[in-house]
Length: 429
Image (cartoon, rainbow, N blue to C red; front, side, top):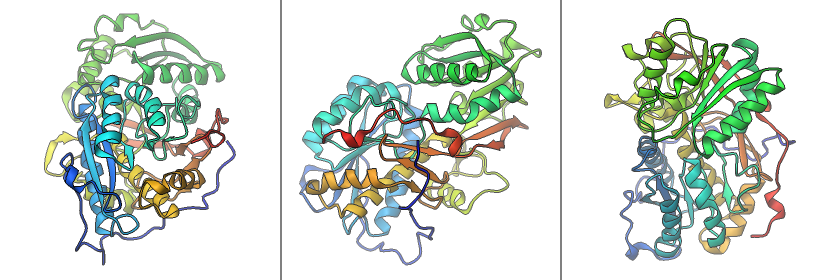
């Protein structure tokens, strides 16, 4: 990938001073009626969130984060003078339902664009239908399928990075600092396969070896029958798990390993939405996690992270500001916030006010080469590749200690690059 410049960037600025709050409209999620659906009176964005199913904890926080972002956008005067409405449908974290919801957004709600899916098996089913419907589809997922050329020109991932770039930037750190004989534990669906394939390539490129590859159904509720498959010569256990039983997974992993354990490197997915300062997780002391956006406010916390936490209602530990036991999915939900501001930028560049400017808006998105760390992009600087429709960003390695996570290494954006695998700009709309 050759892009590294940022010639179209969002400026750093305060949001809440002197904004146009008077006539701004934020539709309550899911209740925009047909009577409002008149072309040119508002910009409507479909939000297929995982309100139920294995992704429900993520969906709840995606929705909360998107609502906070849209409140700010509308207080600023909306997009090109039009208020922005969000219409939420529950996809059930189910591929079939994901397709049905996309069709509903197009035929019934007549939205301008769709954003919000996270789980990659839902994305994989929905993306082809979005292309058939000619519906702009902005992913808040981490699937590599988009950048691999498996989707279409209507699909973008402008904020959150894909698994390949995450592993690309950290694989060398893992093998250099923790060990070269690696056991992989991952969910048995597309997202897990991304981890399996890319981590295997990264480890082998560093002279290491995958000694075991253990796939576990994401709906599993007990893991004791899988853990004996971890070989005794394992130097590093690499784990990424999703679903409602993630806490059970890490507890049972600790019970199985005991005190004489290998090094452990996990993706924070294995503990997203889970309180960490509890006795059951004490065995994780000294282990490492990937984080896209650190759950715990760090000593060098940026003003943008603070602004974002305050707007969404999250405290310095990553918990709800009103309920310390309600833990956010902090390392993923920022993508809902940032994706909305990316859509806003593309619509502003193209002068978008309705479907007549759809292609102009999509081409404007392809022309954006990056985003600067700001209130709009609190996770940090981004490089955007208009050919592959994929964003690239910094990644963090955090160490667990004293019941919280501390960042010990941050990668460069360049470390996450890999050669282009497609060029969507050569495809027709």
